[in-house]
Image 1 (tube, rainbow, N blue to C red):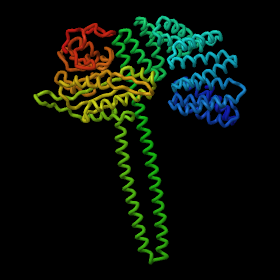
Image 2 (cartoon, helix red, strand yellow; image 1 turned 120 degrees about the vertical axis):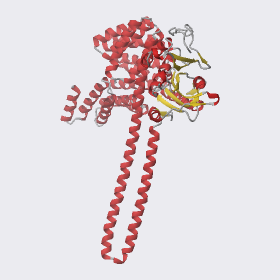
Image 3 (cartoon, rainbow, N blue to C red; image 1 turned 60 degrees about the horizontal axis):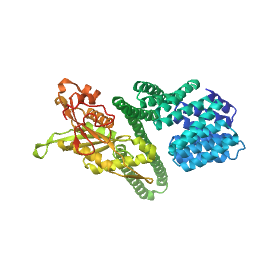
Image 4 (cartoon, rainbow, N blue to C red; image 1 turned 180 degrees about the vertical axis):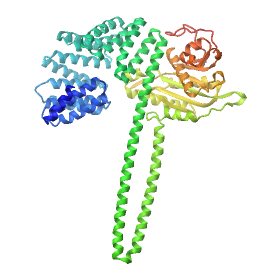
Length: 608
C-alpha cells in the first residue's frame, strides 16, 4: 500500500510532515473501505503530527479531516471547532485552495447541523473563492454542496438548478467521477419529486458513467435509483432486479446503517407499487438490522459502564494496598519502639488495635459500596437509557421464568396474558424533517404515554429502535382489542412540541393473547412474539395507524405452525387463523376488498 510506504519513509526521515501525510492517505483509504473507526483514529493522529510542523497547508488539510471525523461520530461541537480553525488557518495562506476546501467542509457541517443560514453564508464565500481561483473543479464541488444545502432547507428548485449547473461544469472539465456523482444526485432529486421518467434517465446515465470510473459506490447508488424509478413506473420485475443488484454492494461492504436506510426505502417503494409481500420482506430485513445496531449500542453502553466500574475498583484496591503498607510500616516502627521503650507497649497495642478496627470498618464500608454499585449496574443493564423502559434482555430473562396461569374472572370469563408490539409510523420522516433529537422526543413521549395507558403491573419494553413491546400478564380475553384501541388513540392524540414545531405521530400494532394454543400445545413466547410481529407488518402493509391481532387458530390439523409463520396473510385467507383489526377505535373485522388503497384484496369468507 502506497500509504504504508509513505509512513515508513516519514519515520526513516524522522519527518513529522511526511508521516502526517502518510497517515492522512491511509485514513482516506480506510474511509473508502467503510472502516470509519480506523479512519478516525488515523485522522486524529495525523492532525497531532501536522500541528507540530510549519507546513500551514498540511495543518489545514489535517484539521479538516479531523473535523469531518468528529462529524461522522455525531460530535458536532468538536467538528465545528476544528473546521472553524481550518478556515482561520486557510485565510493566512496566499494559496486559496486549502481555504476553499475548509469553507466547503464547514458549509457541509452547517447543513448537517441544520443551521442553514450560516451554511448559506459560508457557501457564498466558498463560491467567491472558487471564482477567484478560476477553478471549475472547485466551482463544481461548491455546486454539489449547494445542492445538499438546498435539499435539506426544502428548496428543491434551487437544488435542481445547482445540480444542472454542476453537471455542465463537470462535463466541460471531463471530470468523469464528478459527472457520475452529479448524475446520481440528479436522479435522487427527481425521485423526490416523483418524476420517475427523468429519474430513470439520469440514473441510467449515472450507471454508464460509473462503469467508466469503476466506482462501486456510485454504481450501487445508481442501481438503487434505477430500481426506485422502475418501481415508481410500475415495472416491478425491472425495479426489483436493479434494487437487489444495488443492495449487494452495501451487503458486501458491511455498511449496516446505510443498508438499513436503503431497505426501508425499498419497502416503501414496493408498498407504493402494490407488492405488499415484497414490502413486508424488506421491512423484516430492515428491522433485523435495526435490532442488531440497537443491540450494539446497548452492549457498548454496558461495556463502558463495566470499564468505568473496573477502573474505580482498581483505584480502591490501590488505595487499600497503600493503607496496608502504611500499617506495615507503622507496625515495624512499633516493634523498634518496643525494644527501646517498654513502658509504651500498652499504648502501642492500643494504637494497633484502633488502626485494625478502623481498617476493618473501612473494608466493610467499601464492601457495602461495592454491593450498591453491583445493584446499580444490574438495574442499569436492564433499562433502556433513553426511555427508562425495560430493555429486550430484561424481558427475555423474565419470560424464561414466567409461568402463565389460567384464571377465571367474574362470570367465568377467561383471564389471559397479552402481547402488544408497536412500531412508529414514518419515523424516518420525523428524523429527516426535524432531526434525530426530535425522534428521541417522540420515543420518550410514547414511553410516557404507554405508562399512563397501561397498568403498573404491565411490563413495557423498548424492543429496539422505534419498536416497543407491552406484556400484560392478566386481562379479560374480551378486553384485548380494547387495549389495542387504547394504545392507538392515546399515542395519536398526543401533540409533540419541538423547536417551534407541532406534530403528532401514529403507530401500527400487532397483538395476541398469551399463551397462543394451536392443537392444545401452547406456543413458546418467542414464537408468539414472532406471530405478533407478523401481524404488526400486516398492519403496516394495510395502511398503518391500525392494529392487527391474532385471536386463535381453526382447522389446525390441516396445516402447520411453520406454514402459518411463513405467510400469516395466506393462512388467514385460508381460514386457518382468526384475526381482528382495530382502526384507532373499536375492534372491527378485516375490511372487504377495495376499502384500502394499495392493499391486496382479501377473501371475505373468513372467521373473524
